[in-house]
Image (cartoon, rainbow, N blue to C red):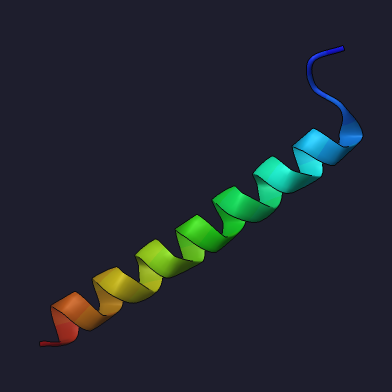
Length: 32
């Protein structure tokens, strides 16, 4: 199995932090 539970957790954590970081970056760039 290519997608194991650990891999899914890791991907979800990375994508989640990436989305949060992108949202904050957009908010700060628009605030300027």
